[in-house]
Length: 189
Image (cartoon, rainbow, N blue to C red; front, side, top):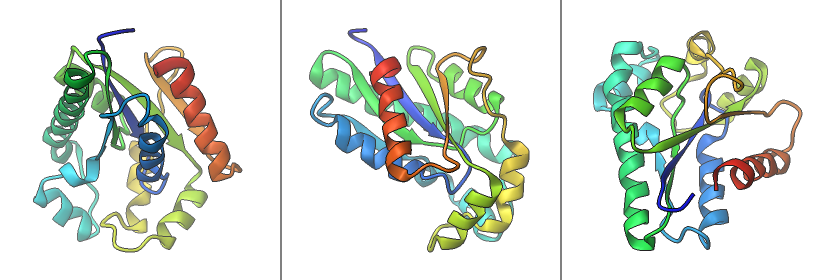
């Protein structure tokens, strides 16, 4: 639809490859949406959240509310910037865990004139633990994985609008990437 503002949220637990997929989406759609921008949601955390996670303590709901509003505002802002220049559709891509329905609802409510699409990258705990243990220099530690899976509320895609689940278990990165592009091409862009 022409003249719309869209934000693609790459959701899921730590270690699912949200940032990597975000970079690939940017490159893939750059020709069609010259001003598409990627926002790393982790970079929007206030220092107290980063300090808490760096110390090995998971965030609770109260830690997340303002951060989620910032995610919504920044995603919308970047998409609208693209819309101003193209006079057509504005699109941004944001990596944000969005683990609970109430988090996704808050994002939608914070920017009600923007359409948010949630692409959930999902894999088993074993797969994610392996990936987290390979990571260096990130504040999310593998010992906090249990809290993320405890909080995880995968969307019921038949009831929660504009949500998609990409099951990563047993798939190559290329297969996951193709699945994401297919969803974007068919339903979003």
